[in-house]
Length: 360
Image (tube, rainbow, N blue to C red; front, side, top):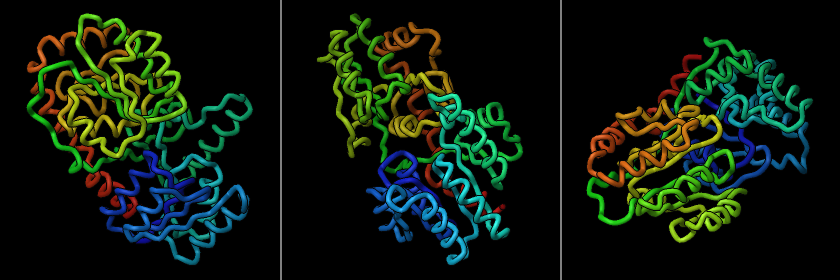
């Protein structure tokens, strides 16, 4: 089966990295078209044996991209088109290819909450974008949601019928992560891995930590983004700059996780999934997460981790104090987390996506 994946760029982001890993486990012939630009992830996908097509939409224009997508579908005799990015151009181009050839099946991905997909500061823009998403999700053979939380948002906000949505959780290459059963003495080692944007809520964690004068801790922040400098300034302002390290983007995340005790994530937005949480669980960390979006689907409160209410600002402080007083008490949750992470392996993800494409 030949599958065309439509992307915007081949940078090393979350979606791109997921697909880079997916091609090593998929049983289909996968072809990728990057409409804007290539990048490290695109190069790695090509090294895996998949063909890639890289365009420059800014120079060639939207019409050229659309024509090229239609040409590839026809010349390659594509069986299915999977649209991963929210760009309306890619979604509409895929539906045009389906209209030309009824044998082609189209799958539109929702890699985040529907409100986040449609988000814009202009009311007119929001209305138009919302209508485009509603139309393309409904006209595709299937809408693919990365969690039940995303599925619910597609139904509630865009009116996509429930039977028209397939839920496929993202997957991680769990072999990269090795749980550490023996924890060293010393400060409680906290870690966050992810993009540094305001919606991810790292500022809430910093404000909480500034009030934990009775807890010996060290907080490592891994990742980059537009909000990094404000976060660094906030840490200094709160007087905890010496207890917080901002490492930026790193290639040694498995090692950094193995050296930590607790993974903390309190997003202000409805998190669509949380691949970093899965990786932390696979590393045997105690995951303390907020209750928004898909996080409660990944972490079972009191079983494989701890879910705290975002609406209760003191909840995080209380649980961190409890962990620091008796670290060994939480060992069962760590062991359960390692087992629970297996549900979100790249093998499971690849098999379910391949099965969906074949069923259609």
